[in-house]
Length: 426
Image (cartoon, rainbow, N blue to C red; front, side):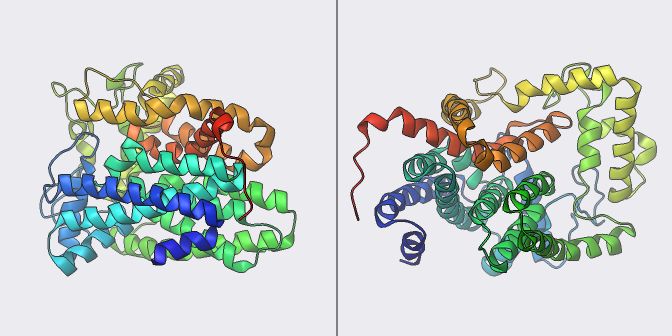
């Protein structure tokens, strides 16, 4: 009932009636996936990180802090502090474990419900800001049935919570105008902080979109609002930074994973062609770390590996460019592969594979409204560039998919325009 009132309050009556079944279907599909996966936390395609979040959350719930009971990925020693994983997501999972016991199925169900509600609803509002009601309903429907989104909504990972935070952040940015009070900017700061705490790399392109919005509003009120939003985001991040300083005795704003990723992504083992997952018959990722660095703590090791990664780039810039270009196929893959299982191939084709033509068509159609769409263009381009220059995996692209669905909705609305009912007065 509360959801129905909230959606009705933010949408015209007819749109609210059409949106509620979409949200209901999104929740049902995600709950079905959550119930299917249940309490079993075993390796799944593209979802190995859920083993780490499950183990770390159990340690936090048991009062051991952000540590692992045994030597853990990527190179964290047993009992030593880690900052490699999302503090916010781990804390939320740990809070549920402390309340109901070690029941991953409960975490999956709660996440499935929240994502099932917030993602289609946010996608609807974001698309409506740009293109109107009919494309908004189409994009909400796509968000509800997107196979990748259903799958990752049921895994103990940050992909979908981060995508939800991003969609609502962009929605707030587009809904803010010259008459908006400080509340809108403060909410955007809150969402930016949450986004960073879920996935720090997703925050990096946000200032580009905010700068665009401030420039278009052309007012000191917008400048003050953006500064206030940045302050709110910084306040949310500050406790993590202080904790990291106590744990490692050095400045670590959020997570210790950029150095690991950049080092492994550009290691000479790839040659000129990036391998998103190293073959099982070759060396493991940990074995690529220079032995003389293994005595360092996690923060110092992350920084040392980042320096080694830049060393690879400086030693052969041409190879780095070729390697980065080869990551395009890994990042944008939409076709089935003999190296993937049935579940991965189905999810890939039933989401990005089906939607990509409409996303591209919608991007072309949106050229006449490019000023309004610019924050989405900027964020997706910058986020994509970051991963093509470092580490490219399909699941890293999911926030991009979320911001491309409004364009797919626009294309589908155009394709079905002849069958659309004529608007009626409510």
